Length: 262
Ligand SMILES: C[S@@+](CC[C@H](N)C(=O)[O-])C[C@H]1O[C@@H](n2cnc3c(N)ncnc32)[C@H](O)[C@@H]1O
Image 1 (tube, rainbow, N blue to C red):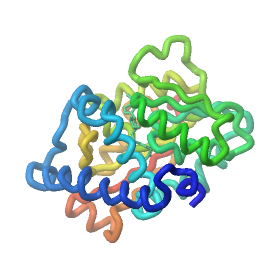
Image 2 (image 1 turned 90 degrees about the vertical axis):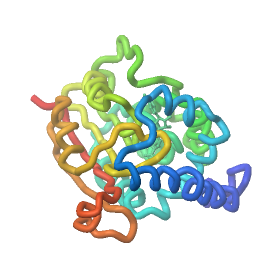
Image 3 (image 1 turned 135 degrees about the horizontal axis):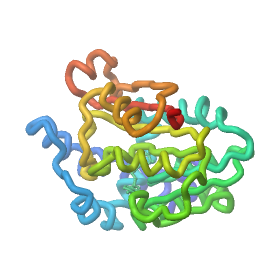
């Protein structure tokens, strides 16, 4: 509600963006996925051209996605787990980075934690950076966060071992090589650093290019990139049990907490 009050189009505008997300953004991709068994796009360059660089589309996409965190069961449960389990587990004075904050809600919750020392956000999309900034401004949390237009996969020179905590929520499925992104996160973390990943399987969207089909694949991806998984939670799509979602290849959000191995 606080956000809606500060949004230029109010609660009605956010609801319209949510309907746009469902009807115009997700539904065509879902139909493509069901007919062909694959995501429509396969390259990051295509996703950048069609989605991230399209400011009007991206603004409505992130605004609608923000609303999905209230209305979609797996999104709401992932955020609840983040706020009630992951963030409170971080040490006092921790340096925290979120990659791909998009709509900015998770970054806002991190900024609400007084015990963190620094809070940074990197995003490849100018529209996402602007959206995150407006959310942080509306919630009065902007001064605590260092937000940058930055591609995780480009030149993190001099940043090795800079963070105690990294969040990648709904990011890895946007990448051609998610293992490379996980290795980059591994390098950015201090030896005791923690990683919180939310990656959906079987979850079509216009900018999803890397298809994971099972929850096991998601955990193996994290482990194979130099992490020990310390917690895993699987949240099936709204209205479905985990068993039914697995049987019918429906979307499941995989929430994985990990630490640097060895
Ligand atoms: C679907 S949004 C995720 C928003 C939010 N974190 C969540 O959990 O709902 C994905 C975000 O990742 C960003 N992104 C994609 N590739 C990236 C990259 N290589 N480096 C940084 N950000 C990236 C996109 O611009 C977008 O804002």
